[in-house]
Length: 329
Image (cartoon, rainbow, N blue to C red; front, side, top):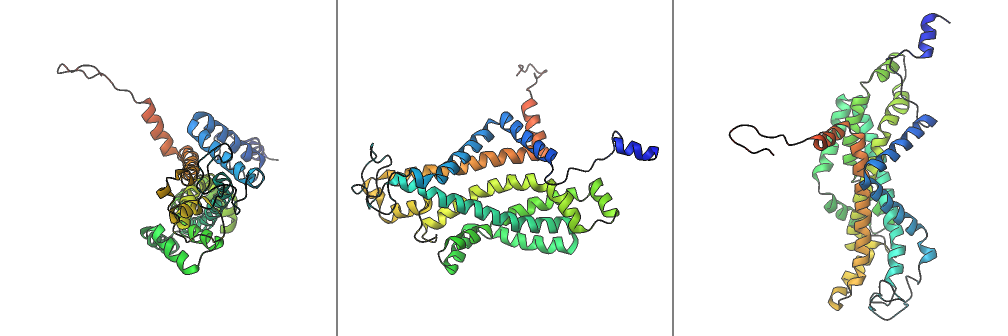
């Protein structure tokens, strides 16, 4: 082995080192440490993660802990909250607490699945557009711009009405209309990654475009995709609730949106049965807030410009004004 080779093997200070490949142990440990550090530095992120974990666990064990059936009456009509029925009953005498527990499963499944569809479509378009550039970038971004100017909820209502009510249709409708933001964010990040030294070196050494994207581009944008996906879950749950409330959701299923729709259709407010609306509404708001807090914290930690902005704001101090008799601030 030559001296130059020995020096390279030992690691020359300042020499560019390729990032770890996907799935390697150091990269996983680094990501875990970074998440732990984020949770310590940003209490809001810990609160958001706690809310998400709480509702995920609650929805997973809902069939085991639901005290009553969601299809058979277990009490009088519009019974107020009591020790027997914690959230009261609806117009059919069905326990609202059991409905809220079971309904969370569908809402979370739709939110996660629709975000996954948006992640795949938006990530693919963003990677292709940012990596290849040129006419590919121009064409894909024009399509993205067309989808951006269309009101999402209005288009979702039209498409859902045309396709018909179905759980799979709801997931596809929401997912295929949420990918635009992901595509633009991924495109901007890929444009930065493709100009880095190790990517250029791999291209010079004859690596294929597929190999470069799999080994160098995707590992670099994966954390950003995760942060954006968490934010998309909140939007997907809100959209799913809106479609269910309008009667365009999956039939014969219980979700937080269908609970609100049922209460509205049967004029629960007229009878003063606030308990048929408030619990489901609080759950929807809590999950959306949890996703927003965690996703925003992840996005801030992964965007250097946002980190600098936060640092500058925290470290800024008012200086005393001197001259013209002004008092010090």
